[in-house]
Image (cartoon, rainbow, N blue to C red; front, side, top):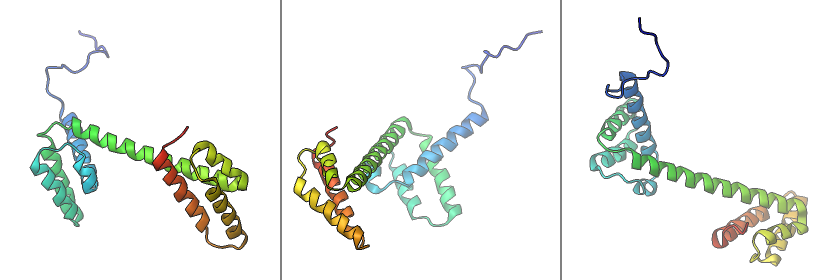
Length: 177
């Protein structure tokens, strides 16, 4: 009697199991759904050469009925079986990484603004360390204006202006760290 050895895997010459094929099809369908959720500008960055797939993605955006949308996403998954999904997957990962980097930069700027406002006028130096080309006087005026707005319980317009200025500095000069 032959003993079972756990290192015996499926034979590489055998076709994938039905469950494996279904997982692959669901993965392609999920990739198709993420393509449908992209904007036109983002979709243009994805290397899709199949015109039927592109038109199916655009059509799916117009569908409001949940059941019809689900059938159309299955159709998109079926179309994706005929193409190589690796370049599309790489492009989607690149878009996601760029989005994560933008979000991280946004949160860093929010934290810098909070630190500046918490430190008061001395907080201007925090911005000057990070952005040496910043206008010190403008930063100081925004911090003082924020203090006056806080005392009078006014909306935080200076805080918004400070964030917009910090974002402008970040976009034009990059991160000096």
